[in-house]
Image (tube, rainbow over all chains, first blue to last red):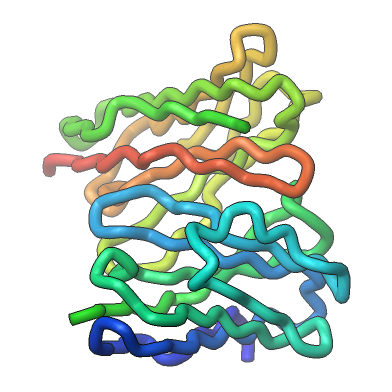
Length: 114
Length: 110
């Protein structure tokens, strides 16, 4: 695939349920980023992976959020015990190198918590 | 932490006029400043970027200027076209962190 792929594109869940969001970065990109975009808002940085290094988790909004990246490629963002305020579009991006390189974004997962 | 302020939040211009969007940042260690364009319902895409060792960069109708002393950078779009209508985000990047502005919704009126 040529670009960053995210799945599912849409996810509707009930309050209190856990959800997993998946991101397939561009092949060869060492860095992977997760962002949250609430309706009409900017991009909120959540977490960053660089290769196989331990991620910087400082941007995660609560301990209900976690993320992992297996084999330095695919990443999953997990939200436990979802709340209505978690409703947003979750965007993944990848890049060569680090933050000072162009980030290529996926189409996002629109999460709706009822 | 870094704080990025972006203004205006909305901007309407007539087709053919210029548009300017301004951002300020707080962390003097930030050294990379990309601009992203997000059309309605689509993913953000980089349109231009500038690094801290450069004061200005131009790509056809788009230019970005950076004033490190004042900690502000601006996006300039000349000869605007209807397809320029979108939300534009600035960002300031430092060591292992990126902070985005709130976004500017640009509307180009034909």
